[in-house]
Image (cartoon, rainbow, N blue to C red; front, side):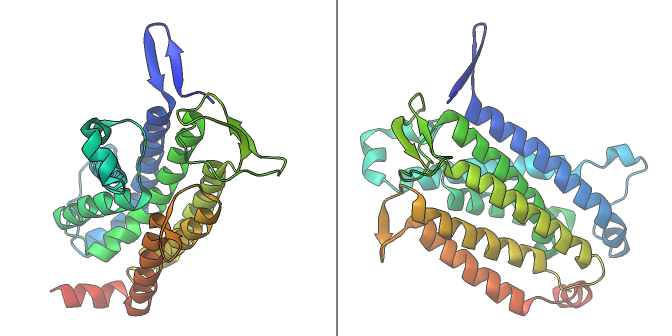
Length: 270
């Protein structure tokens, strides 16, 4: 594995590089979603139109703010999972390694809620808008975990695609499941599914539907991946991530059952 790229006197962490790449690609995806929904948003007086299309940069602003908030949330959640380690070494709070998916979701959600109010878009519809980009960014960020070998790999395996991480941040010489690759492939597939659901939603389907499927699909994916991850078990034999995934699935199902067409949702918000 390659935890750092050495370019002369510069040592560039590959995890950070891939996270930055993921945020950039996610921004392009989100901007494309903004653009395809723009006419519908303007008709409902959600956005203020600019004179030049080149000035349409909502996606990059949203990803910039939500991405930073998500990283902060992911780091805080990760260190709070092991409070004794944090008490023994407070510098863990600012380490470049160790980020929890659910903490990132919480931090990003808070930022997106605030931004939804800023753009005057109903929160659930704004979450619909951001869901494909979120799945895409997460998928690419997982490649950073693979390159750095930060311990996000799975249990030992004899499968032909098993990998070892002798030079990783958390090294192992055993051949293990390369779970970051699994997650990259699964989350990219989820992003494609969400994008297509979002395309149908342009034709007055229920608001909140894309976000509901995001919660359900990513929750199921992470719950299943955890069976071959090395995370410790806590609640009823489940890892913390599995518990959070169950919550995500349940919330997604409830939202899906309660979702309404955009016009109805707008009337209720008035």
